[in-house]
Image (cartoon, rainbow, N blue to C red; front, side, top):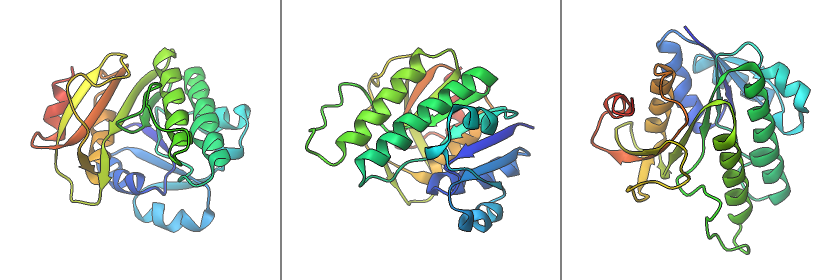
Length: 223
């Protein structure tokens, strides 16, 4: 049994991953900003912990992360406010990275397929701040001493859980062959759940589309 903290525990992927992790026998805590979301995460099998990571300092995040075997970042500012995007998707995520380096927890970062420093997003595009934030954090993760995996899904859908096509690199910010497509959020949740069972998979970026290979088999091929 692992003790797992999911930051952004009321997000769509998190709410799908929580019952999977609980069914596997793990102890799951969902860090949420809004206490009104407590019932939802508890119904999904997690213990709710109200924690506003956007406004927590390093010491607060160190305390939040302490005692967990696995920390999953599935949070996000949700776009629309560049300043908040920088505070959540870059600054807070960076502090969580520092915290897991200090505690030794495994860090599973839910990113996105196009996250890289040379993303080529137009600075006038509303997506630019998010692209910058995610790319910078992912670069910090790859340069860190943490036990990390970056999950980089393509366009997210609400389709039922299915198989995957994966690409992966040890520390490269670019997929090797895969081109962006789409993937159900439920399949991304399954990737999270299956990675928890595979502690030997580390220091890898996993780009993923929906596909025909079962998640467990695809991850087994990683090592």
